[in-house]
Length: 355
Ligand code: ATP
Image 1 (cartoon, protein in one colour):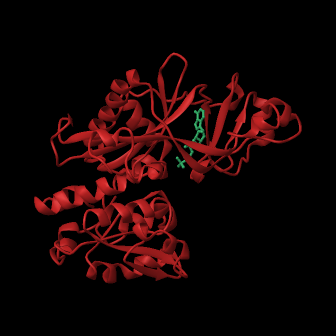
Image 2 (cartoon, rainbow, N blue to C red):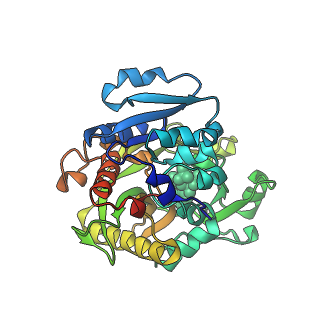
Image 3 (tube, rainbow, N blue to C red):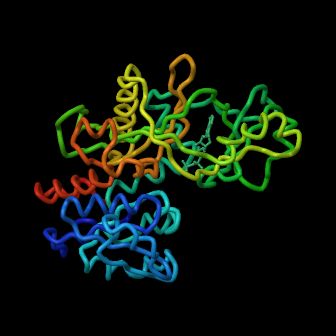
């Protein structure tokens, strides 16, 4: 449970003078750029020395840096950060570096609903949420002896697909699995991958309206994963596996993509169902989230994961995407977050979008 006194923290804030802060990694260039465009001051949270590469990107560089020896040390500086009127924008690396437990008790106002972490990081609860929303997820294989077609084996907490492997039989599974680590076995879904970037506002009722607030689709990407996405350049996967070379799923980048337009109604239906179910389960997911999907040859979506905050797949779209261009020009997810904070300040609703 999140145990944070948000109204108490905000009572000392000068809301006309907020600073948007995030950890210097992942999607930080986009978050700082978007915050600047909306007139906010920005602060980069970094370890050790300030990363020089920000000098190369003046429009993505934070106004200031706050350096610590270790990300977990940020916990000790919560008072100092609050004195700067900081609102933290969490991204995947932020939560990973700080640690999930610390994130839930970090005493600095944070964009989004932190309760969501418990529903997204536990694979059983994630399934309860997404199944409950009526989404189709890849089948789970409880007993590896029942493997009779390709499966993907996922280690819990392994970020970015590290160590995941494909197996086609129980024998293959047994040869490769590391039994000391908890894992889930899922059917390997054949199809094309789309990572859908949504934004849910509980505050604004324009556009695609939900029971409360509204939903936007800002962009989509496909992840570039090594080595699976390039393996075919040196042979078929079967040939390579005979030589002991196995595909891996470590993300190295993101490729912009659009989807055939006839699939968009389904994209909105899925996003809507996920938000409505989240309102019922834990008070709602707020701001950006991503459904990670495979579209099969029957044009069905199988959703294998949800990321409940800004994903790095939004990075190709700092100047907007083919979808966000139809909402407003130059609208990145980072900028949309800043707009939501600005709107909440203007309407005295910060407690509705922070935790
Ligand atoms: P992250 O937290 O960064 O999203 P993760 O470690 O939770 O990653 P997943 O996103 O679940 O891992 O999976 C990593 C990759 O494995 C996916 O991007 C996709 O390419 C592939 N993958 C995952 N599940 C399936 C599936 N059921 N069928 C086919 N491919 C899959």
